[in-house]
Amino acid sequence: MTWTRREFGIAAAATLADYAFNARAKGADAKTLRFIAQSDLTILDPIWTTAYITRNHGYMVFDTLFALDSSFKPRPQMVSTYEISSDRLRYSFTLRNGLKFHDGAPVGAIDCIASLRRWMARDALGQSLSIAVDTMKPEDRASFTIRLKEPFPLLIDAIAKASSLAPFIMPERLAKTDPFQQITEMVGSGPFKFVANKFEPGSKVVYVKNADYVPRDEPPSWASGGKVVKVDRVEWLNLTDATTKAAALASGEVDWWENPPSDVVPVLAANTDIAVAKSDPLGQPDDAAFQPAQSAL
Image 1 (cartoon, rainbow, N blue to C red):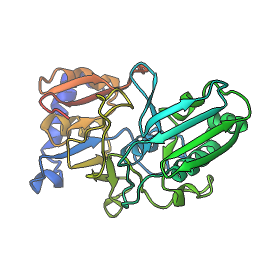
Image 2 (cartoon, helix red, strand yellow):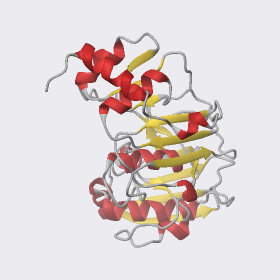
Image 3 (tube, rainbow, N blue to C red):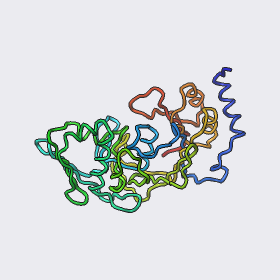
Image 4 (cartoon, helix red, strand yellow):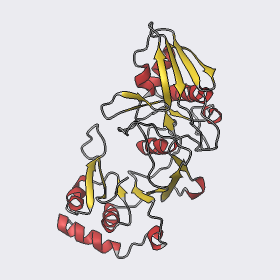
């Protein structure tokens, strides 16, 4: 059977009548963002897999030393200041003040070094960088240096990688996990905390605002800048089919649909309560995001 777009829209609306979302039925907090993620989150360790859904999860929980802006230029993120020697063999980094992991421990140089080592063992660019590295050592609690055997012009670009595998910074105790074994805790210093006892593989992932997170002063620009959290809770929902997803978004049962199929786009775009936005500056043709037009996050 084939459907016209109009028929699809009617069917989607009708489906909602039989579909109830527990969160809305219970009068959920208005500061909860309900997000239809691109796929089911099954692997939590963002250094262990190149899956984009796990990478996105990584950005919720962890932070990075550098990040790419919307022009793909590396910008300091956890780093406050850095220096490169004239011979380009010594890179010195100082972390921003106030960085804390979700367990309350301060982020230190030893955490950064251990995290970079684990990332280098798994990432192709990181492996190339590791060949050029002579030493990585802390100078004090919040500063460390990387000394190279020979110049590696892409060093900053490498540790600013935005996509799989992004060099997320973890506590040293987790970063010392065998790179070919998954970490067993989600303790980062990012803008959200992972709620382990609410994790339902195949159904839902829950994050809550990290009250200790201190965003940068710069305005946000793609993966860089000030990540100001404006909601208390985020729920990633794994719904089964496009009809259910479209109906949920149209009714306000969910707030954001990450990557709807292209044939649904005209139906959603015709709804004046839904905003259509390109979510990937790389320009992937099917990477559009949809959310209620009146919401501001």
